[in-house]
Amino acid sequence: MTNLRIGHGYDVHRLAEGRKLILGGVEVSWDRGLLGHSDADVLVHAVMDALTGASRLGDIGKLFPDTDPAYAGISSLKLLAEVGRLLAERGFAVVNIDATLLAQAPKIAPYRARMAENMAMALGIEPERVNVKATTEEGLGFTGDGSGMAAHAVALLEGLR
Image 1 (cartoon, rainbow, N blue to C red):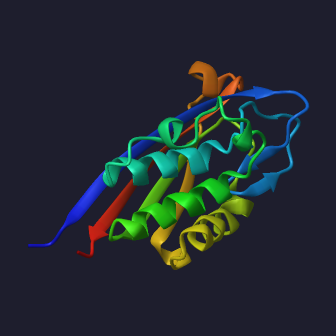
Image 2: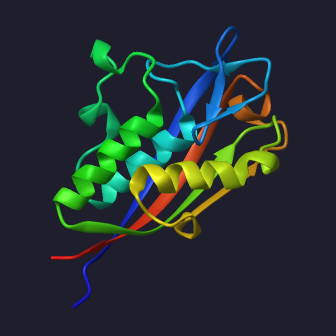
Image 3: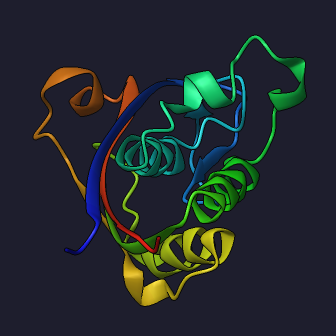
């Protein structure tokens, strides 16, 4: 019997003045950034929660609490690499990841390949295993009015033991 596990991740952050916008480990040129304890990379956070969900590691709030000063301003790619290490330690391999950014703006098409490469590199997998896409919400809700961004991700893991 094949040991496959699927996980879903979701994250949301408010946009704020005076912050860099980091998405998929890429600094995106924009007038605001996402507010959070770490670099607030909403896309990577959703991916991490999908991976931790599939492997029963809990969630990123449990692994990397925002009350711990060690994670203040940290690159989410470093946290993703730690999730990858925990997965390997437990005998899991990433089959694939599919992530969707929900944001009215900016357009991320020029950055998508680098985002996928960054996340793949952090996990030690081929970039072809990571898909990144985005959608607007047609002006609806907090993502549509530009006050925040959200991301969904699904991940498929294979247990190697």
